[in-house]
Length: 386
Image (cartoon, rainbow, N blue to C red; front, side, top):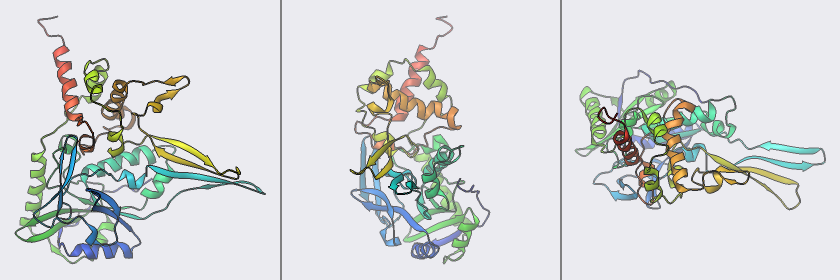
């Protein structure tokens, strides 16, 4: 199980953009594989980075329902973008991963478990994605049978958060209570400021490991004016979000909407492609594949990410339970926003907006919830009709 992380009390420090190179050097010296954002293939992608030069300096993004585009910024911000198509789930629980292999030997069958032990430094983790990682920790590592592959990649991580000062148009983390400020779950938290030709970061430590790394970076104690400026930038980002999710009552709303006619409207637009589940930072459903060589002396079991939008996902003896697109979309959103609470004690949505941007037909989860809520209100009996 990953170590619990609690916000520390070390005072914030200001470091210049040039200090990012020294941050990389410090992380590599401590044996971390640095994973962070980089501009590639027309998007902000996550990759193993060898130096700070690979960060997406000067790139922002434009997002809207069914739309995602890189845009050139007018500055050299390294983290001036919102969530891209990948989440940290892609690093901690890859879409295709070997679980074990078996070999027939003269002494019998030898089974080798495929568990990767990695020391990742996760650089540029947004607060919404910190919330998503906490959900994955609870689901995949917090039960009686923890996932050894996930635990092997998750244990020993160093999490370097970056607070958001410019949300994407599809973001709604404020209404989910997951951002844009980082409150916990990090070793280091950075707020990037780029103004007046001064490119700098306000950095604070959340764990002793983060404090130790921060202590060797060139910087100066943060003055009150700069700390206030950084806090205002994050608060302004919260106020800029135009999308939102209702504050409460979602499990009850989804349960009451099981037979809503609105599902037919969604089904008329949904392609059941599963894009929303692939980009979602918390969707964790999977299937297994067994392969063997022609001799039968060597076999492997692989886990592959699956989606509740796949027709075979609900296959039982005789056929699939959810044959219609209507029933599959209803299952996804009802689990994500409704029954997830009963299973895991929280919503399965962190407000990152990826499912909105990467839906080919622009289905917006916030609009669908609003439509269901409106239908419930108009269908509710009033004193005049009772």
